[in-house]
Image 1: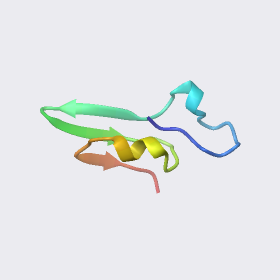
Image 2: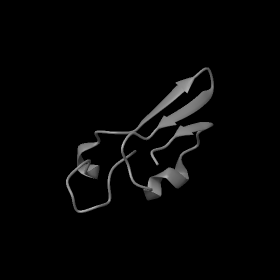
Image 3: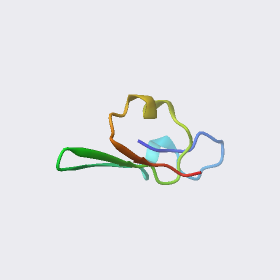
Image 4: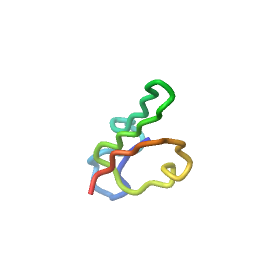
Length: 53
């Protein structure tokens, strides 16, 4: 899960364009892409997260 919360149509939630979770040998990696601090991030069970700043 990854999307923008702003009113600008960069990456709306409805499109599911960005955000990936990879499971590599039992290690879960989250690559958020271009996203905001969305509520769904609290529920992710990942070992490593790549987040935009």
